[in-house]
Image 1: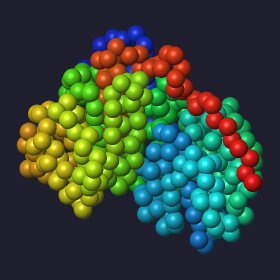
Image 2: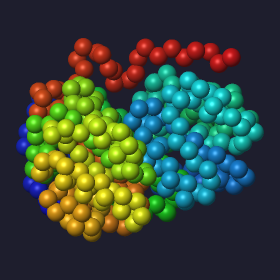
Image 3: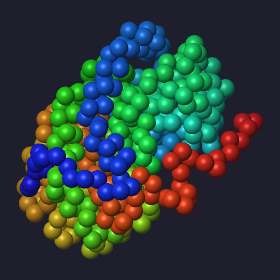
Image 4: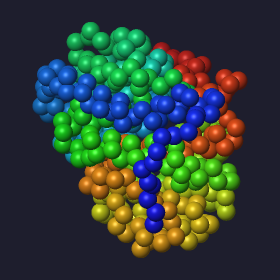
Length: 389
């Protein structure tokens, strides 16, 4: 197995990739700023959260659309373990489309945690309004990058709400969510986890800093291979990471490279038909000892089925990787061997972002705006919010 080396300064950035490239690389620095913001608001956050977390039967709902929905999936199990309450990840698109199915128990106290880069998507504000209408008691923690967005403005001075803003640089100017996603992830894990999620802080920052220089040649070479589709695999919290990684590749390549997310066990149940000799695989290997066994099983199987170099394991530690698949490649995340998977996802998603960036450049697409004709928009358009009967 091979590891990703720490390298020298990156070369010049191609035209049309300036924002996306910078926003991927800035993440270790803005993560430190995000943690400082949470520390500065610690007293206010505790005053807001403590009475809620003491409520018998509290339900925490993590919500967002697209990439922001995957944020909830990544942090759900870590927060459930820390908080000792029911924590669910439910997309705003599901809340808006099927309100009664998402909020069945009107009397159950609920904390709705909303993730939103711009806070301007129609579903973002509608989901909070629906929750207020259908639930007797609903508080709101809004984690967003845009202080002037409709979601932040609606909840900024409102009783029963707390708005946690990321650093302004995290409101990505590029099309795809990169540093916005990871800052919101980190904000949720710090604000609600209160230091009990392993692997946050300096360890995650250092691991990502090793990856971001462009001369991490193996990541670039993998992305620039003549592959026409990719599979992203992960289990537990890393299932949502696989979904986000597949979405990033689809977005930045303008839909020209197919991507399929699945779990290590679920892949064999039909989705394996997606494989061709020109398929690349990114497998996010869990740090959980039990879950890891299943990841290593599928690593062994896929490394034996595909040409050399087309299967990559992204992992916090090396044990078992070489035994499972000696010819496979590994991108090891230093310092993350004991991290919870939700924290491991922070530097791991940087790998996926870099793959998507360089796959886009290989195809001659401008990652900052992969849909110049406006077929898909940075902030979703064309959504009608229908009245709730």
